[in-house]
Amino acid sequence: MPPLCGIKVSAMNHSTLRSLLRIPFAPRTYRAPSTAPFLRGTLTCHRPNFLSPHRNNIPSYPRRTMATTSSPASAPLDPRPVFFFDIDNCLYSRGCNIHDEMQKLINQFFIKHLSLNADDAHMLHMKYYKEYGLAIEGLTRHHKIDPLEFNREVDDALPLDDILKPDPNLRRLLEDIDRSKVRMWLLTNAYVTHAKRVVKLLQVDDMFEGITYCDYGKLPLVCKPSQAMYERAEKEAGASSTSECYFVDDSGLNCTHAADRGWAVAHLVEPGLPLPHVPASQFMIRSLEELRTCFPALFKSKQEV
Image 1: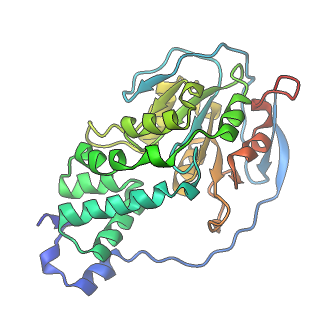
Image 2: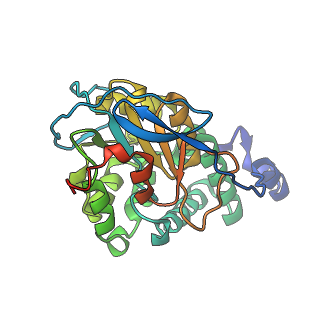
Image 3: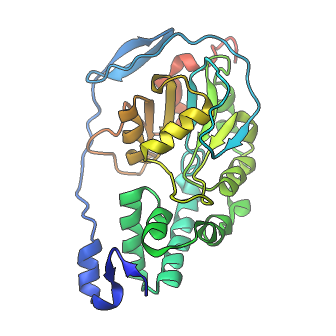
């Protein structure tokens, strides 16, 4: 049995393991901060009164062809800012239940490869997700699990073809973003096979110029919310500075770390999910459609639509 966080599982009884891995949750309430309009170059946006973001002027620039990258090589210089989109539970709704199906497969992986019972597998899964932002990160650090094997048994095993369908509302939203003002880029903790599969099934793969993903073939893994992952995304997408980056993600932790870096961030919290007690970032939205009000100048005018 591999050591569990430095302790052999065989040396612990069930209650001790639960005590070690217990993650407390407390009821929270949310109060939206007051906002004020500000100019980001030529863009009129809104910010909480305690934030003071800034953006340079945004010139027009032609759209590029989508690229797939996982190396720190920089993209050619492009004066446009970059709009980074998360994929899972962001481009599609949690109502698709892909999240639940993925959690089941991850827990099964923990049970199978670490010889844990269902309860302990779930607790350890949540512990690693909370600490590292990705369950596989904990598995590679503490148990020498092959990330590509994990990808085959979890992400690639999802029945996405039976679940995901083209979303005309999503496509319309993405088409309304003015590509002469901003570049569209995907930023995900998934491996490239899963990422490409999702956007292709949603029929929006042609809407993005590139993708930065967690490369399961290279150790140590680099993933959100690590600052190294955001830095790599900037280089691969060709962002001129952190102040030229926009981002939307459903993970509060990812949003907080991106906002700390200086990105303009919208935290997606779907209806039915609890609101954070403390805002994770500058904006909190209930649907991607609200990006139109967060960053209105990034979208085409009504005359252009």
